[in-house]
Length: 247
Image (cartoon, rainbow, N blue to C red):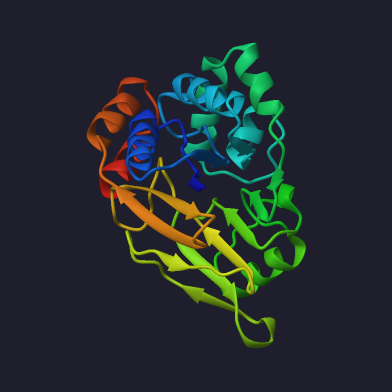
């Protein structure tokens, strides 16, 4: 099975649909959404309704800190632009959208695959897994061989080296990485809706469970259109510029 993993969509319909179309062309048979479906972007309703259809069809999805903040359940300290986006997004959503977000778990597991938006070590604390030490803490707390996360917005792969010490590998887009089951792996799949590594292309990952191979992809999309929607909605200018600069 080929599983497409998408995180940090942040209300960016253009980024999401581009990744889904690319994944389909790569033979994806299933999808998993690793948190932060909303926040920042101007299409929270369309994004949520698309993801909800996927979940109804069997896709996995977990809650992110921006999703939680919509429900007044976020424990993260956000900057002003993020807070403004949360307030605006909350006003766009109906009861059914909020109910869907409220029903999302903090973690999900299917066989040896484990999903968590931030760290498996106290998921509701929204810890950024941004280095090998934090990756090791998350791996120690997570059940399963393959752990998939978001939150950081930059693709990265961690794995257990000799003696269980976590090591870091920066993936090259489009290059399949063997991820055999005799080790444990933690992948930050990147952001489909707000990349922050200087590359405007949306990011997602594809896990081939039969071949035990993980491929990270970057997908060009209509970021100028997504940025224009942010401006038209009256959201903070910073959020549009981030899409234009990939930062």
